[in-house]
Length: 360
Image (cartoon, rainbow, N blue to C red; front, side, top):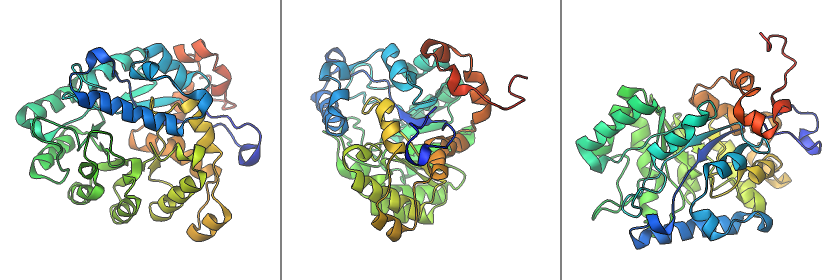
């Protein structure tokens, strides 16, 4: 759990349970690349990584292409920065022989620490009946509660699809039928060689209106179309904002980060925002500390009428994701007191409690 350093607003605050709502376990090794787009994709990711990571925490490109389960476990949990993570798959099978970051690979990983991870599935409406059967398989085998959607993914001659298409609605109906309630469309920065316009946030509008019982967590809050996202989310109560990619701006664009958070809190409020590191784009072991200590300027506080108070940050860093994924945080703390990750990294004090019922 995040533990304040004793300075500033966290001086007298309790620890914060952190759910990283956007993590990946990818393979961009040269052996796995079958299309030049695969090389362009990982190098574009790496440019983002290098641009927003403290110099002393940067990975080399070779480290970045493919990392081990052991490294990911240490990066997420080693210093107690994160308590739980949600896998968001990105298949990209036109670019990578075995896929870039697949549902099955994530599920195999999570199986060893099932209380610490949630595995999301995916669908692509261009896959038709076969895709619907695959969605059913993911639900049956992994009990997925959410899907990550990549609307700019290439498939044959197609360079993307729309969330508000007739074909997509058939898949969203299947999600509702199967009890898959959390829909995570990537609507934000493009990655070479994908098309920026295929990540436009506008197609979330009709989908969210047509499926009010589903939650649409718009990843990357529509950047660089933040205004479009905010106006859309303000009218649709089932639209949420995922902060992956926005979060690292707290590191070297703190004023821009304050502007983004001011707009989001003004339009959406504190109950519809979810922290995500986008690991391994960025490491939560430094990013959580950076975001937790971010502040709005006095001008921004005056303009938006909001602040990043401990109560607000507690919701953004974990409680809002817990609400969407039906996670009992207090029960998780009890489970984690003695689990393998706590034992490996000596995190026992993170889960101590004065609750008299805790030892029951």
